[in-house]
Image (cartoon, rainbow, N blue to C red; front, side):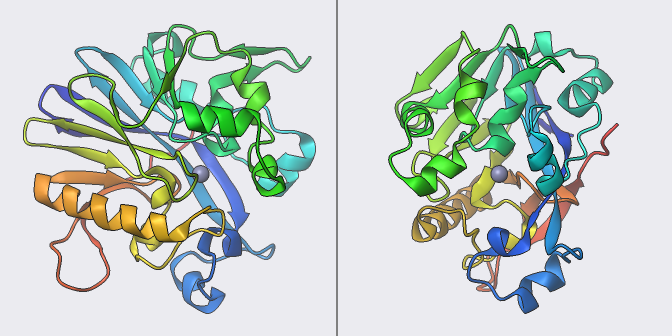
Length: 286
Ligand SMILES: [Zn+2]
C-alpha cells in the first residue's frame, strides 16, 4: 500500500500464471534472462497479474483485471493460471466488493489484462464483473482488438470480443486523458500501438503503472523487451520518458507481471540500468 495525498494505492494480485520465458524476453538470450527469472521444465516463467487500485475522493479506480475465469481447458493447460479468489478476493480483504469499483482503466486488451472484466458461468453465460464501473479503453485499442488488421494481432486479441461485448459502460479515449484530476492515462505505444500507462499524482508523490512496457523488474533494462511488443523501439523510448518523469516527480513505478515485486522506487540515475531502491511486494492469492 502507498499513500499519495488523499489517495490510497493498493496492488491487487489477480493471480499468477506461467508464460514462455522466450516470449517475455524477446531477443535477450535465455542464459541472461534465466538468472533473473528461472524457467520451469516447460520453459515457462512465473508471472503475476498485478492490478493497481486507487481509492480516491472521486471513486474506486482499478487498473487492468487479469485473466479472469474464462480460459478454455487448452489455454489453462498452456498458462496454468493460479487465480484463487482473484480480484474479488483482494477487494474483499480491503472491505470492497466488485460493485464498489467505479472506474476500470484497461492498459490494453490482451487476454491477461481484459479477461477479468467478465465472469463466465460453468454453463457459458457471461456477465460484467464490475457492474457499476465505467471501463476506459483507448479507442484505437478497441478498434484493433475487435477487427485485428493482420494475423499476428488476431492471435493477440482472440479473446477481446467475448470480453468486450457484455460491457455496457465503455468510455473510449482518444489519447492522453485525465480520468480524475489526479489520475490520468498516457499512451505509451510499444507493447501495442495504443497501449496506455496510468499515472496518479497527489501530495508530492504518486505512481506510474507501467503495465506491459515494463512487465517485470528484469525489464527495467532498456534493451530487455517482450517478443510480444509491436514496436520495441517505442517501448524503449517510453521507458526512458517514464523513468525520467518518475525520478523528477518522486513517483513510484509498478509492473504488470513481476512475481515478487508489485511496485518500486527507482534509484537515482547513475548511468547504469535502472534499479529499485525500495519495493512493495506482491500480495498472496487467496
Ligand atoms: Zn500482460
